[in-house]
Amino acid sequence: MEATFHSLENLFLQLGLDNDPAAIDAFIRENKLKQDEALVDAPFWTTSQAAFIEECLSDDSDWAEVADQLNVLLHE
Image 1 (cartoon, rainbow, N blue to C red):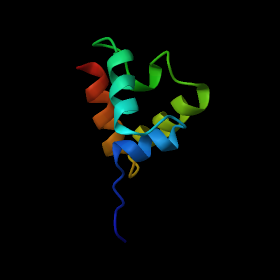
Image 2 (cartoon, rainbow, N blue to C red):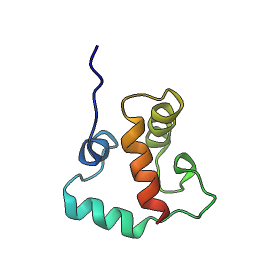
Image 3 (cartoon, one colour):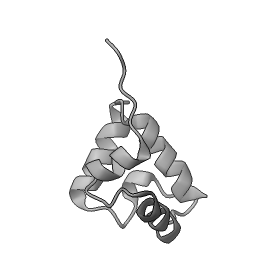
Image 4 (tube, rainbow, N blue to C red):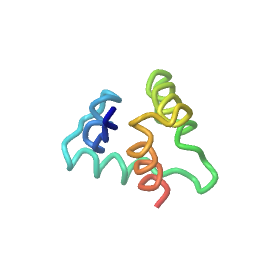
């Protein structure tokens, strides 16, 4: 079985967010996380968005890599 790798644009689409590059850049600029703040605990997620992110990371799903990428970007 072949693994599926998702892009940052696809993750934003899955989260119900605007997924064009300018919107993604703006989201990242406007929503920084504290150094010790977990991605799933960010105050800007809806309950369903946080649940999706938690599922991605806890199940080490094919979304985990791009969720990790977003985590890094939001902590920069």
